[in-house]
Length: 204
Image (cartoon, rainbow, N blue to C red):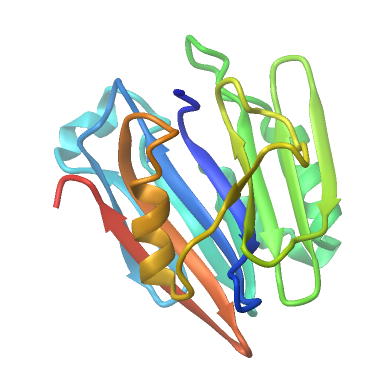
């Protein structure tokens, strides 16, 4: 099944909260998830000339602000981080409303999630719908939200999660066979009072 770019939020089997993002792409597969610093992961093309072909293929997909993890499929990551003082739900709702869906040929939805050790919110905006919802996470499960054929917040959109570290989860989600055309994956795990980040790329 091809669901394009997608995010996953959940808990490991030993109870650690995590957020993951995977690039799945047919049009621009030559990209990598690159850790910029201890707080940010960017999606960038291997050939920087591709930046000029499509404005939506380069962006920060994970940002950590005061141990709160933001994960999205586009440039709205940073804007949500700037609006966290509104609160998680309102930051999501505000930025998704203002930025709207991506104005490409596919009217690609913007998807996002925010979580810390206390709570998690997921949200999306499409060309015909917008939603933000608080979700309750369960051990060993991950809720996924994708841009194609899976752009809904639904308790049936759940996968089993293997691994307990950021590295193990990144490997697992990148190679999750049910979702086609894997390119790159980034994961942030909340481990007590720290957030640990890892990336995994198909072409490396």
